[in-house]
Image 1 (tube, rainbow, N blue to C red):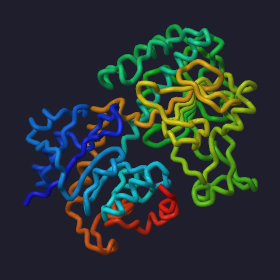
Image 2 (spheres, rainbow, N blue to C red):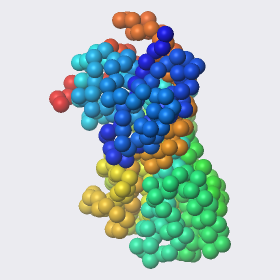
Image 3 (cartoon, rainbow, N blue to C red):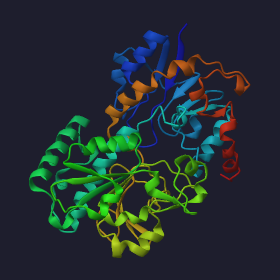
Image 4 (cartoon, helix red, strand yellow):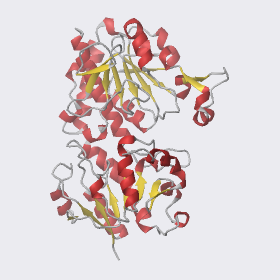
Amino acid sequence: MKRCIGIRREDKSIWEKRTPLTPHDIVFLNSNHSIKTIVQPSSIRVFSDKEYIKAGVEVSETLDVPLILGIKEIPMDFFLEDKTYVFFSHTIKGQEYNIPMLKRMMEMHDTLIDYECVKDENENRLIAFGKYAGIAGMIESLWAAGKRLECEGYITPLLHLKRSIQYPSLSHMEEDTAKIGREITQKGFPEELAPFVIGIAGYGNVSGGVQELLSYFPLTEIEPEDLESLEDNPHTLYKVVFKEEHLVRRTDGESFELQDYYENPKHYEGIFYRYIPYISIFINAIYWEEKYPRLITKEYLRENYNKEMVKLKVIGDISCDIKGAIECTIESTKPDNPVYVYHPEKETIQYGVAGVGPVIMAVDILPSLLPRESSIYFSNILKDFIPQIVSASYPVDFNKCTLPLHIKRAVILYKGELTPRYQNLSNFLRRPD
């Protein structure tokens, strides 16, 4: 007997062209696990309706099936009663803008599984687009740096970079990046800009994508403690990766311990400011919550930008937590208008690359800038989880639900109720809509 799942079209943004499952992987699920998939029609999805139909997939407006997959948040009028939804809900930090959606799902007695929360025993995410967020975010940041430097009177090889959305494929992007890398080797940067340092906070999947893109450039990798003594070599980019021990220190003078930091962040204070004056482009690729110290604060920018930070041209905030680790990320941006300049004294923004203050790149759907490649990557991972979700038993008692533990831990709502792991969200649900 065939089981049935559905894929909703993405309609949060005209730029959101990704899909959770490709036609190829839907055929795999049908052939190997007897799972039928119904796909809502879409005029913008990177895999067209015709591609799904050609693969034998049913395309229908109606998705009255037990399990529905998506990518981004779902509009409140879409939810049906007693269904299971799997998508990036952006609710686990109590994000205010998605609380009404969570309340609606509770009213409809729905079950919510969040991709972001599917993790292994070491808290590593198992279903993610992170690599492609890193690749696209690095390209956007390098493009922005080239434009900003041009405004300041410097012509660099970075000016030849295009925007992510202007490349027809990842291979075209890589080919162009390699060409520009060769130009940097041959011609270099203006000597006044050397050493040109790209700092990266984080070492997970997003950081991996950032560093994969950077591998096409002439690159010298250094440690944070080397920043003060770099040679002014204009024919290389310097890459430095910051880990937690570089970002914070204990307030009592005791040595840094990673697990203690995760469990007792109140005992730590931020020290990233000591590295900022040496960085040309800073990429934020860390997971952050309010309990952790910020990397760059508004106060620090206000007090130091004109004194020490003229070197910092671009902050590529790939994590894009509004007023989060990068406090001057005060709003997210769209793919067609990806950057703004943050004025440290006025605490205002001006879209574009010209102005007083660092350029902020804060596109919140970066993987959608490489929709086909990122969808293929994501779908190839997700297809192995679908049979486990479909085959599980969902009795009234959550404790008796037979989802594998790594997926069960990602269940935020179960039949309209917060699961034990996410009871803290009840505090946010008390807010008025």
